[in-house]
Image (cartoon, rainbow, N blue to C red; front, side, top):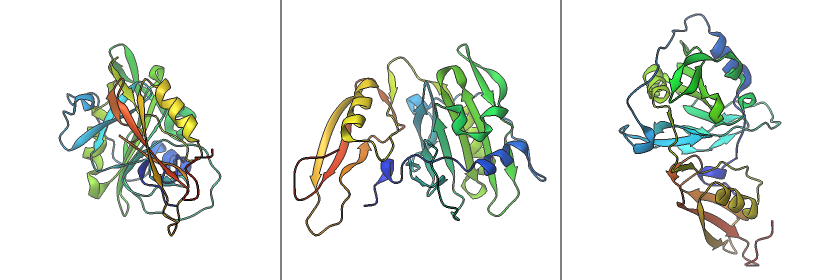
Length: 256
């Protein structure tokens, strides 16, 4: 079964060689400058964008970007996602726009090349050099973080999706979560319903289970298929997250 959104091929790593090349820079790369802005993703002040986060920080991404839709280290569509190390076969995938978001700096190859770039309310911001490839398709990228809040972001944007301008907009939208805000956690596709519910409750969120039985004539993989709002969403503390669960047609008992 192809899961929708959150669990469509759960967390995968960014392509490390590609990210390392972006940080090092290439002939024809142009330096992007962007430090601080007035947009607040947590209150929706960026038109056409919405708040997503990890750790204790949030950014704004285009509203139509999907959540966690990646496979074997490569986003399959314009996506924000949480990477995790997995062994994958080499393959070719299209270059799409995305943000890799993680609490673990080692998940991003560029995290060891971050330099101080100011503060937000006493919390240091660190950024990498931001570069644009003159390629086909062209692509611009930057990594930034609020290390003491365990928030690391790597942005990659195709030139025909906004390139340099959108990278700068996302970078400048970086904000801290407010005390009454929470982030819907990311999950591995192999985590059980019990594990997912426990993690949501530990994050200060309520859980509503929506169960669906797979029709006898359909091919369905049992288990959690998605959440609403999806992983990464910034929501008020105590918000109810709908966890959608598919069960085999032969039984109403979910076996983890």
